[in-house]
Each structure stands twice: as C-alpha cells, then as structure tokens.
Length: 171
Image (cartoon, rainbow, N blue to C red):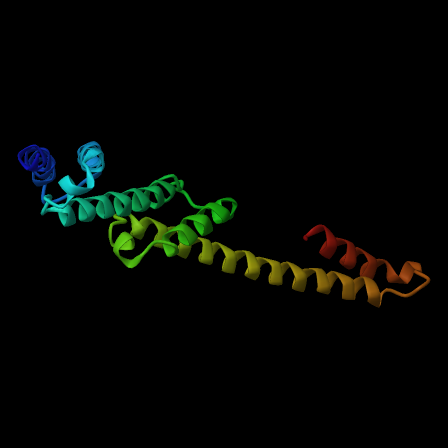
C-alpha cells in the first residue's frame, strides 16, 4: 500500500537526515547503513525519498576521506630522519598524492612533511653529486700523477712515485 511505502521511505529518509552535516571517517558505518536501508527499498518506495543527494554526498565524502587517508598514512610512515635510502618511499607518497583529486588533496593534512622530505632528498642528491664530482677530480689528479711516471722507473723517480702513492692513499 502507499502508506506502507511512505512509512518505509520515511524511515530511510530519517536515517539519511540523521547523518551529520560534516562527514568524517567515523561516520562511515552510519552512511553505509543508510545506503543499505535505501537499497532495501522497492523502486516505488525510493521515489518517496527526497534527500538521497545528502546520502550520495556523504558517500562521496567518505570515499574522498579514505583516499586521502591512504596518502596521509604513506606520508606519516616516512621516517623523521630522511636519507637517500627512503627516496622510493618519498616518491611513492608523492605519486599517491598526485593521483588524488584536488578535493582529496585538500584533505591531506600532512603534506608539509612530504614536501620537507622531498627537499631533503633533493639536498642529499645534490650533496652526493658534488661529492662524486669531487671524488672524480681527486681520482683524476692521482691518475695524472701515475700517468706522468716513466714506463721504466728509476731511483731518481722515487719522489714522483711516492707523491703518486701518497695521493692515491689520500683518496
């Protein structure tokens, strides 16, 4: 009967109306219960539910919050001391953040930690590159000293051999 349909729809409508205006992850079970109740209605009963948009908005918000939480958890898992060994984890967190929608990105509350980690990785990479360049330059000096030695070394070449050996030992 129409009265039974209206009562069933009102029960679901009340569940939806009871959802808070600001949805948090803690409201997921209430949103899921409201969706299950709506889905249990007949097609006719569903036409009497006038606040379905509130339910769909709540479901979207829950999905967005869950997606943002996955990224927040990746960022939170980054160590407080950043080394080059965690570059993959930092890159994975950035990629996950980049895959979020703009709305979801706005829900990530610890983005600053990711940005700081990225800056530290960049600094460490630059430092490592500078050290590598310095090491190569020092190795070239040793190579040049060794190359300058004659093919057949004589006692008179002792100072040059010792200088090359000392330069090598200093590497």
